[in-house]
Length: 89
Image (cartoon, rainbow, N blue to C red):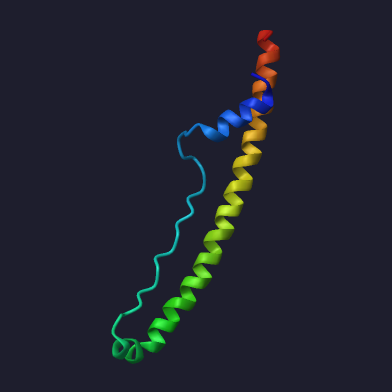
């Protein structure tokens, strides 16, 4: 298998999770009762603002993990190419 095909296999085949764990934040609660929404407006607003900050951090984490995983896959593909050369395939 050529190195580029090895990368495709690595990307498509699930394996053990050894990477950074990016955890999505929980959705903020929005009461259906308009009076409760007004009574707790400051708390609810804060929850939504916290969520927006946390989801942005989550997206950055996913972007970083994706970049790390692609770099690792590239390195493993190169290692596999060297292995194939060593064994004469």
